[in-house]
Length: 229
Image (tube, rainbow, N blue to C red; front, side, top):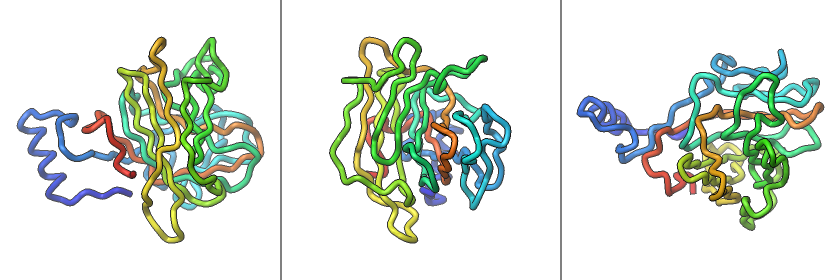
């Protein structure tokens, strides 16, 4: 977890009193969206497909293809930092941004899919449902073991339709690491940005992924820079 000194928190509160918006604050304000104990604030597409295990959101390997999303806030521009690993499975861990909750549910929430930590991707938007082609830029980096904990940061600008991801493997016993940018999404013709939930996806039955220490900054104090690199 990225903790800020008390004087920074106090300065932020004073700024709000003075009428300064969070976007004008000099330091990121990272808000937890998972308490490590319950799934309060999260909605899954299937009952018992996700549980809390060891302080992490844990996808059940008996659950069908599906997702769980944070239902308290929808985000257009944001910084999302989290830790993840795969316990078992035959598909990379996946998260979804800029999707849309609909009944019946769209495949992958009709969202942009990022595959942390190594930077695979898919475009689930209606009319797309493909690898995204030139909309995704994948940057070279070592291939990290998804069975070990990694840290990732997604920085998304809903006005430009640009979303970037930086990740790094967590050394044994470490709480943070220095990230490397692994993926960028940009669509100039059809901006993807919309207010939407942040979501975690189970791609297939038999997969167990875990996510913990999920925090979000929105609005973003500096939308041009990662804070984990």
